[in-house]
Length: 117
Image (tube, rainbow, N blue to C red; front, side, top):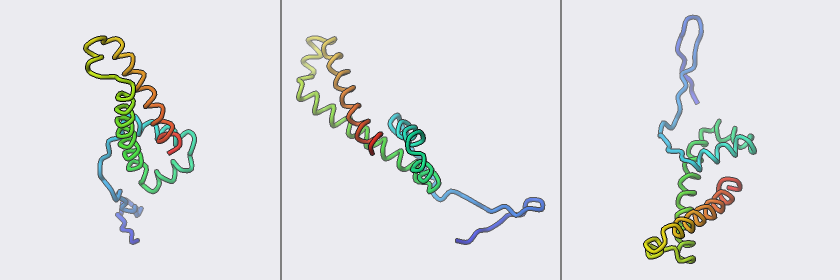
């Protein structure tokens, strides 16, 4: 590893740059993972941050959570009979079941990927 320096007044300042300048989309679950790591796993958080692996990790966790949430919700909806016919017949019951399904699926995702992942 060879460093180059720039003269700034009487001081030599190293020319440092990030290797990867890719932008990552960090959504709700990525932000939740970051908060968990920062509060409960500070050594892992610092390690990921210093090795420039934190943002890719958060983006990967966010994408995995979204995909798993979608899959679990679809399976629960099929199993419990939450259909468009129910939506047309009784919108309040459909909304109640959808909210229940989403809450339970999200709890599974949070436990599996955010807090234990």
